[in-house]
Length: 103
Image (cartoon, rainbow, N blue to C red; front, side, top):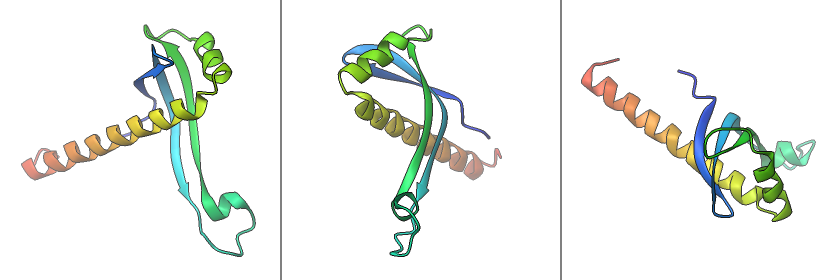
């Protein structure tokens, strides 16, 4: 069952908003001393999202606030935490359904 896109509620400097997450993947690094580049060594996160206002309309002005107030990293951290929580809840629901024989 595909999870994306998923929309999560966020706050940007106290303003209610939504993030429509199109892609989120964590790539673990090798931690090898012979890794050809830092991304291969440390890993990286592939996150693509759209910021919407509280009603779900595109909100470039909220993205401007994120950039002007240097909040993008904090907002992205919040988005990733919410997606991780949603993934966990989905896994738990699927395990419960299997236990009940629904799947």
